[in-house]
Structure formats: C-alpha cells, structure tokens
Length: 279
Image 1 (spheres, rainbow, N blue to C red):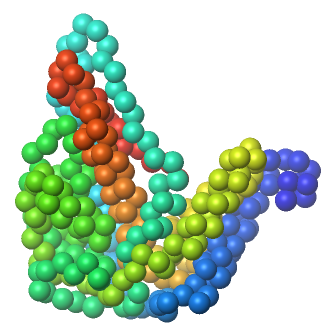
Image 2 (image 1 turned 90 degrees about the vertical axis):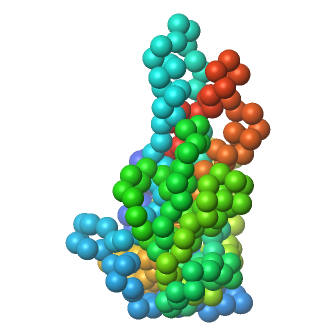
C-alpha cells in the first residue's frame, strides 16, 4: 500500500482509513465468527432508549465516561511551596481492549426482577449509589444529575463490584433490557487486531499501526445507528464497548491506588486528572 502511494505515509494511511478499514474489519469479524458457538442477531429491533433523540444527539444510555479531578489535591497544589508530583494514568488502545466484553447475543428483552443475572447482558435503569471518595473517581464518571438513569452492562458490573469492595452501596435496579450473553463474540477479532498492532509496533510500521487503529475504532463507532455500516446494527454493543473501556480504566486506577499510588506527605492520591484514552 505504501508503494502504491509512492512512499507517501500520509496518503497511504488516509486511503486505508477512508476506503479499507471498515470493509476489512467487518470481513475480519465475519471470519472470526465462523465456527462460533453462538449465532448473534445482526439487526434486532432497537429499543426506544437506544434511539438517538435527534440526528446529532444522543440516546438515553449513560456510559460513565471519566472526567475527574482530585479536588483536595488541586487545592494542595495551589497552596504548596514545592511542586507536587502527579502521575498520569493513560490507556493505549482502550477500545481495542474493550472488545472483550459481555455482549448480548440476541434481541434485548425486558425484565423487572431487579436482580442482576451475570449470564445476561444489556442495559439497565438504576438508581446509582452515593460516592464519598475524593481520591477515587466515581464509576459513573462526571454525572451530576440525581435520580435514575440507564447504564450499559459494564457500568452496572463495575458499580456492583465497587459495592462488594465496600466503596459504596449497591445500585438499585428498576428494570433491564437484556439477552443471553458471552464474552466471546468479538474475542477472536480482538486477538487478531492485537497481534497486528503488536507486529506494527515492533516493525515501526506507522501505516499498519494507524490502519489497525482505524479498523477497531470504526468497528466500535459504526455498528450503532451509523449509515456507513449496513452489515450490523447493534447500538447496545456500542454502549457496552465504550462503557467497558471506561470501566477498564477505573479498575486500573483502583489497582494503582491499592498498590500505594499516594503522596505520603499529604495522604492524597497522586493522580489528579488521570483518566485519558487513546484509541
């Protein structure tokens, strides 16, 4: 491809991004499903809460995107005579890692038991618990509005795990839209892309690296209500992938906190606005 564009890295990358990435990743996904244990629904009916209110607007699902500042640390920095070290937490290929997620296999069915079934996956309307930890981000991200909200499966599982860790109360589940689930639907695709990305990094191949990134980012972004992808319409998967990426980063922050990532002099966690992503 680089030779076809006269050695122009930018032109080759742009061509692959615009002309090949989506086509190739969808073909790779189909190949990855050959011999799979489950046959997933490609165009199940879309629940109203998963439909965008306007063409450029959003639906009703809250994904828990992190946007957080450690306010006590910010104030300490303002009044400190000496600079305080802040450790930034980053996660490369966040959405590639998030392809390993519990995905609904079939159409989403309503249920009102209020009990979370770990063998199923979907979206849930919950009343979230309070969060009293200034040195650790809320698993719900930057949400300020009180009251019930719809969350995707990874966000609910993260809140339940935080409850089991004693960090908060358990969320109250009012209703759910779920289907039987598996972590394996996109796993072979993820492994293939991880291997290609690793190979590109080792070979210092910028064109391949950007091509792989474009493949998985377009997969995640176009399988919802996008008109550019006519092979799969699963807006529930889009929310689950995105929420999984955010949940993965929260878990990374928590593990570092437990491992002692703190400023000994002040007792404050040294991550201030750590949560960032790279596709």
